[in-house]
Image (cartoon, rainbow over all chains, first blue to last red; front, side):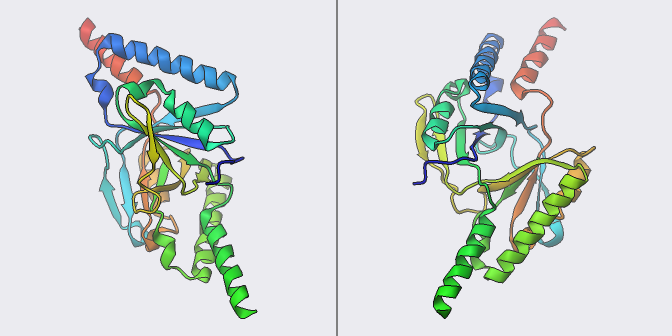
Amino acid sequence: MNTQNQNGYMLLYRTDEWYNRLSQEELQKLINQNKAWFERLTAQGKAKPGRALERTGVTVSGKNGRFVMDGPFAESKEAIGGYLTLEVETIEEAIAIAQSSPGLAYGGSIEVRPMANECPLDVRARELAREEQLVNV
Amino acid sequence: MLLFRGNDWTNSLSPEEKQKVTDQWMAWFQRLTNDGKAIAGNPLERESKIVSGKLRVVSDGPFAESKEAIGGYFLLDVAGFDDAVAIARDCPGLPYGVQVEVRPVAGECPIANQLKHEAQFANA
């Protein structure tokens, strides 16, 4: 496994609307914990502001984008609820930060992904070109 | 925000086709950036870990090669949702099976919003 990555990592929050099941006190406590957690990471230069996503949207697919469908989401546990980007160099550190996220105690999961410097398509096209060269040698 | 879903669609393409769709994709992003419509974007590596639950268990992402895996994203700055959908329809990967999820970015954390709703309710 390539554990070093200069491009940083992305945390994708995958959740349903579990926060609707919390009391006002629990919510306020979690918001404060989240705020402190994020401020600590920012102060250490490890996190950049992310965004939360509304639980609405469409999915576009098909040639020329001819299919536009509502959703996924509202109820889905896999729906992406938001993201953060981390400026750390190893996936182990990115995972450790994800594990310290206060919201995990209540539900949902966090997907940890290395950010690519270069589009994977480019990399694959180069590999194939090199293989072809070898065959022709 | 545009989320590009699908990690397995390039397997059936020839090197020439791959190069072509890559060039188209880069030119598309460059054009949107020049027009001030795209403010960020990044491809993601296929490697994926999932952290979940109270016990904070780490497992391999189930999505390494699937139609649902997120392969990258664009963050757009456009006036309305319809503009974002129109841009999504220009995605060069669509003819090959890529799906583009279009999501409004929240002004505020949905959890904080929920709290405000409840407070309003309590005061009503």
